[in-house]
Amino acid sequence: MENMNQLYEAILKGNLALAVETTKIAIEEKADIKSIIEDYMSKAMDEIGQRFESGKAFVPELLMSARAMKGALELLRPLLVGSDIPRAGTIVIGTVKGDLHDIGKNLVASMLEGSGFEVINLGVDISSEKFANSIIEHKADILCLSALLTTTMNYMKEVIRTLEDAGIRNQVKIMVGGAPISQSFAREIGADGYSSNANAAVSVAKQLLAS
Image (cartoon, rainbow, N blue to C red; front, side):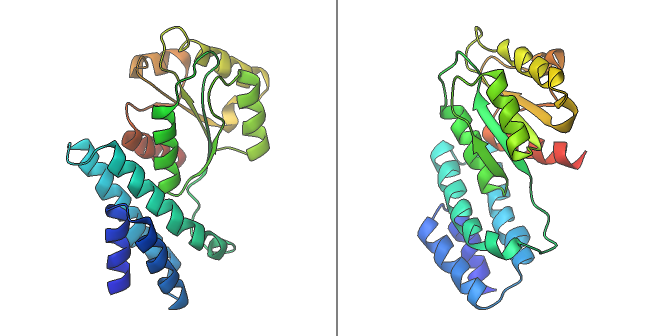
């Protein structure tokens, strides 16, 4: 139990080395994997997310916590094979064609990874065809589209049209975000979810998969 509390604190404070060390000890002691993830690791990420929302933590802290969580999860993933612990899901994420901004998108990707999702980060300037092919290849549960420019945000409509033409629109949930994006725009183009920041994106992703 002491080790697990230490793991919680390590992730909360973004201490990657301590998170990895403590996780190794927990594995050696045959601690319950489901409890490690749900009762300590996920709760630490929830706490740092809440601190971010209330202005008590900032982007660097979010990234450090996500990195610590990811490091610990990498040790646990081989033990999840064949277990009854539910996987968070697979997410394809990228910035749409014509847009080269990636700081916000990368933060969202890091937070999603830190919360247990498998994330395929395609990068920037991604065409609708590449998004569609990646969804098929990775059997993605969610597609996250990012845009920072008003001149590129409408390309999100093209991505959705491509998915419809390929017959895979109903196989994946679509989330959108970025500075010019709003909830009303998300509804207008037929997206399933919208988030204004990285922490909210994790909550939206979980809600979409639960629906």
